[in-house]
Structure formats: structure tokens, C-alpha cells
Length: 281
Image 1 (cartoon, rainbow, N blue to C red):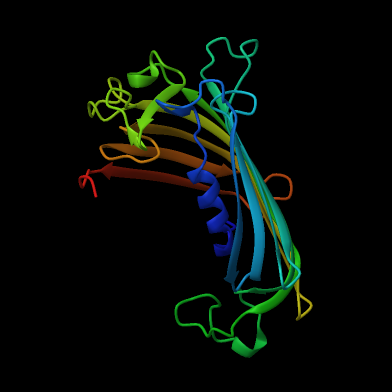
Image 2 (cartoon, rainbow, N blue to C red):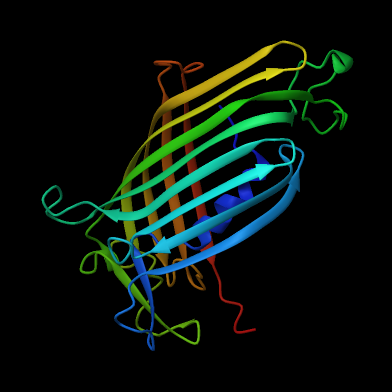
């Protein structure tokens, strides 16, 4: 499998922190006529992968639908690498397609053009006795590369008619002074997901590609494409700043080795998080 590089983590965290999929947050003193909100910020960081990097990102909520969030980001580094991201969260399928209005779409697209990039992978003849990128490897065991890489994910999520998702498809959190107003929680009232919280079944087609040419005139070309199936339970009081309840996910991923895939593989993942309030600070 391919890995998302460390230099992307700041972008992914920033976008996901501002994205409210399938929910709305409304301050009780907010202007009811102001549906569209947005935020933008520059980012400056350094990593071995892209060196000194400058970028900018923006997030827009309520563009077409109140709960929908769109985001975009771009970067350029002093080693001449550059890249773009496009995100969409919480897009609700039209009623003509989904009469129940319980289907939502999340999408993530990224592509980058890499130049003079240090990639920590095997192939440097000066370190033939090491595994590049391992704990015991030298910091100089890298290969100077150039190429392209990208990925795409399209997640189709179905809100199950259970718990808090039974009667309210778009959950609305109300806040006062940035604190959740009691009575607007989305879960954490019972351990049983059939009585509390919001549960989703989802299907996610995905693809990922990395093609690199390096200073030793070797070529690195890896690709993956396949499908993920999963069950996600969001049984916490507040999806974005939980203080009680739990979240859990069971996911199966499969690449059949079709098209330009590097080979077949499958993976089963399970995660569980419990939230405990530490009181007000």
C-alpha cells in the first residue's frame, strides 16, 4: 500500500477540523439570514519531503446546502514541488435520487508534482545494507526524486434510522459562548447505538498513485485502487468537541489488482475511542 506523506498531515487536519459533515453548528445568537460561512489561512512549514513550503487553504460551509462544506488548498515549495487538494463534505443526494435524503457524499482529491524531493526508500547504493526509513537507518539514506503522486476517495454514507439519526437527518448543534447548549447533543445518552448516537454504513471507491524517477536512473511506480466498506458509530455528545460517549468504526478494504494496481491486497480495520470529560478549564 502507498502512504500519505507527513508533509500532508497539517493540511488534512486543518481541513477536517473545519468540516462538519452531516451536521450543523448554530450559535444561538447567530444571524439566521447568514447561511454561508468561510475561512482562509496561509500555511508555512518545513519537511524532508517538500523542504520549505508555503501554501494557502480555504473552507466554505453552506455553499449549496446548509450542512455542506467545500475546501481547497494549494502549496509550492522551494524545491519546486507543488500540489493541490480539493475536498467536499456532507453533500446530500437530491430527493429525486434518494427519497429518504439519508445518503451523503464526501470526496477528497489530491495531486502533487514533486521536484528534488528526498524520498526515504531503498535503492541508494551507499546504504545497501540498510532498510531506508527504518529506525536504524541513516538520516542520509534517501533518494533524490522527481515525479507525481495523487489520490482520490469518494465516500457514500447512509445514515441509519437509529438513535439520534432516526428523526433528525441533519443534526443541529446549538452553541452559546462556544459551548454546546444542553439538549442539542447527538449521542452519549446510552451505550446502545440503536437508542443513542448516529450510525452510518458507507462504501468508498478509492485510488492512489505514485510515480517517481530518481538520481540513480531507476523508476518507482506504485498504484492502488479498490473499494472500502464500513460501519461507523458516532455516539458522542458533540461530534467535533466530544466530552462524553464513544465512536467506533469497522472497515474492510479490498484491492483486486485490476487496471494499473500494483497487486491485490485486503485489510480489516477496527477502531474505538472513549470520551471522558475532564471538566471546564
